Length: 284
Ligand code: NAD
Image (cartoon, rainbow, N blue to C red):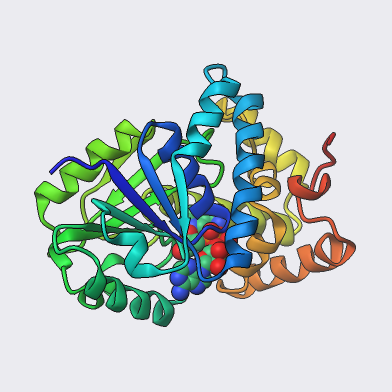
């Protein structure tokens, strides 16, 4: 089966980007959300994404953005949204019960050959496979935020995913301009967060134990390895609210770091790059 029609469930931060990038790559997209207000804000998000593509991508033209927008249709009726879908990419909130409820309904209304992929960052496909009613046609396809710039797509099946479906999704990821990362076994955090979370935790541990300043830790990493960004620059890019939430799930040192960023940054409205200030100050 070749994938032509794609439905994206959820038009929030990631869902809108996935829908736009897929349409930009020539696929017909249906973007589904729960009500008309969400669809209205999705349309606005798509306009902003068009502007971002024009600013950031040398191959983006006004005509191509217009064509992209025209390939996206919107729906609030799930059965209607998926009735012709070859692939459904789910990007709804990170709540297991909600995802399983939606997969159960999706499994009932979607054609039996439709492939389902979750963009979940922290749940495993095996947590949801049974609810889909088609575990062999279900896997994770995990994008990074700002998909048009950070274009990895981690493809991760569970024990019962059909290898042919895995390969098909790897091919699809390439077709939409992603660099597919084949994750061969289920792994919480995929490849990227399996590397990034311990790295950031080591850096924040050095900071709260008073070993070195954020600036010196970043300098050490950048000069010592040639990396373009240090851990605290990465924290600012990820956003300090997310950094706080992740740190709160860690050990005592991580909880100390959470309290530190709350007091010094979050409570002062400094949330990182998005607000122009975090560990560092940024030009708008
Ligand atoms: P978000 O809160 O921005 O968007 C979620 C969207 O889902 C909203 O538009 C909401 O109205 C919609 N929704 C809620 N219930 C729904 C339902 N029953 N059916 C369909 N849509 C429904 O969330 P997000 O940040 O885009 O995250 C979505 C998923 O993507 C999560 O699984 C998250 O782990 C993953 N993800 C997020 C990021 C990120 O940086 N934000 C990165 C990679 C993966």
